[in-house]
Image (tube, rainbow, N blue to C red; front, side, top):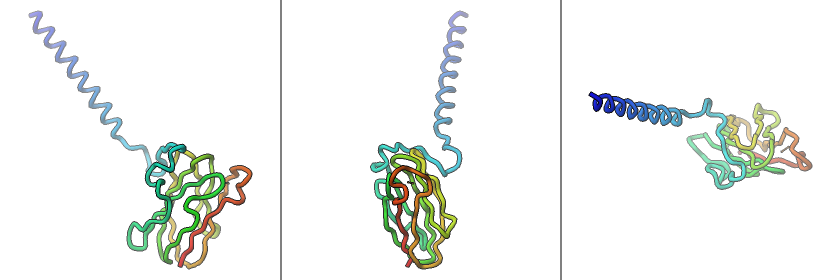
Length: 152
Ligand code: CUA
């Protein structure tokens, strides 16, 4: 009779343990809300994909991804090119302080926060040179911070 009680207690403890394991595994499997901001270590941006290879990459027909790092005071990559009619998905992070990424004449306007990944898509229909400017004051070289997208 005593053995049965101990056996029941043991089984109960085992089930409780497995239950806790299952719940924590489930909790860790849940992805963060909204795909717009993922955590990233600003000190390791240069070795963290996709930022280890900044620049324009074709991802589909007339569809590109612009992977960029904002830093004091510039952007990596600095000059990128796409054919007119391309949709560009910007994927941007900062390796130091808060920066901005804005393209005058378009609705491209992002705040770039260290530790986070900012994303926005824009379709470039007209050929030309589009300046990318920083619109968050980030220090002494703020006004020199720029990059460009050449739409051919
Ligand atoms: Cu970067 Cu202002």
